[in-house]
Amino acid sequence: MKLVKLIKLNNLQYNANRDPAFYRRPVNEEFRLQAMLGGSGEAKARFTVDDEVLCESSVRLPGNFDCKFSYDTPGTRIGVLTVEGAGEQFRETIRIDVLEHAPVG
Image 1 (tube, rainbow, N blue to C red):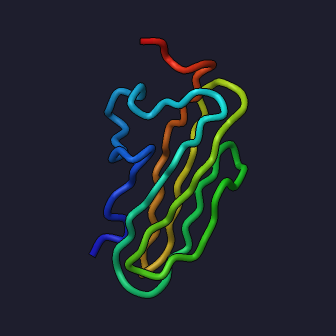
Image 2 (cartoon, rainbow, N blue to C red):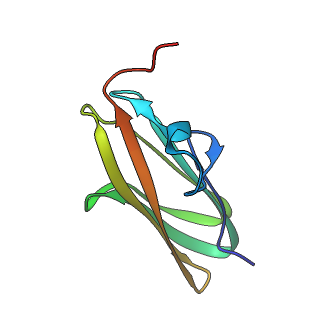
């Protein structure tokens, strides 16, 4: 059974090949990262951006890891989701785009 079944960013299934515009948020607007986890036992999940831990928790499997965060400056950041548990290790790089202001139109 897969440890990480699904990753969502801002309530959309995360796909690195999808246009990044789908996941963008303006400054000070909340991002939400979720990982749906399978297996049994317990897993440790962590989301870091630029070596800063934004969220970290132990999750009873099967279960969900939920991380909410925002930024007060625009720019592109690279986050890393790591999950360890059920004898597996998982790592996914996630692009975080913060806009200077909300799109008009």
